[in-house]
Image (cartoon, rainbow, N blue to C red; front, side, top):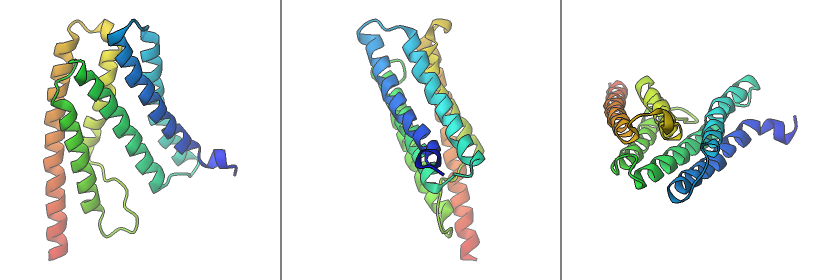
Length: 188
């Protein structure tokens, strides 16, 4: 198997980082000069497709690895914090929302480590509500990208940020209870 074929899922994941930087730059230029929506749509679409297909290809070709899962998580963090950060900077989202996301990522990583203890190789541990909130967060910049179809973009973005914050808080509490239960199980 060639090196490119063996690393195809990771190459796709790394392309998401490149497209994330391009999307952040494109959002920045929207506020500083005119930019067609086509660039925003292209970057946003490439990010979503790469997020879907890197894992799919890794599983189909039996190339899934812990390193690939971690790289995927890093690419997601770069995309989300970059786009949410620039949107908060231009007051399209509340300024506190990137802090909520950063705290949620930290909580996710810590609880994943605690929930994965005892395994030889630890990969991220997902819960359904947290995964749903993460997917919705990945789609949130799309509300801005397709803002011409949204009557009140600022109100919509604020409402989305509030709903996602509630979902992340519930997910975090759930993850903490899982950690406590696991500890109780091993202490007995």
